[in-house]
Length: 218
Image (spheres, rainbow, N blue to C red):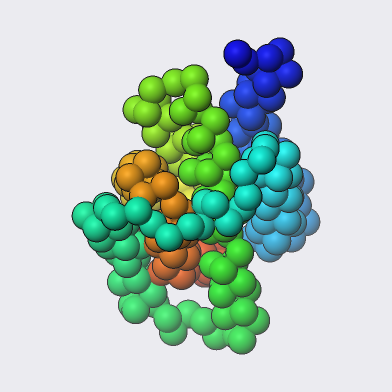
């Protein structure tokens, strides 16, 4: 039987994406006035802190390592997940020359290493698991994917032109759905985090935040 406190916790977590996106938007808007694209740094700190808070608060008795357990057999979806991750590497291969500073490389690598852990443990971890207790699988997939996609233009898109590209919306929608299905099939975030890491590497994240790299159509 679900207690009142459990019900309150569920709805707090259910609505948390809106709170996170709102604070992210306000942070990006404020710092963008003073430091432009470098607002990605305070935004990342605020965003990861919020994700970390909700992950730790709502994971209940589940250990973080449980989400990173050895994947159950689902070779087809693991393969699709990895293919989704490698697709953006073509962007890196054609534009690697834009890294004209060692600091840009360091920031780019740090973001790609840190970001997937927070995002996947939140979007496809605690939030997704919680939704499955009250809603059908299709709703959990769509809810987490839609809000995950929307968060990009509303937060990073405040200062990054590439984060408002419709190409990105399409790609993230496909990736979000595939990652969610893979999690359902494997009960693990292991390959999803790896795929997400490769995506952040290939998408030249920090270069797009600073508008050094712009998609061809922009």
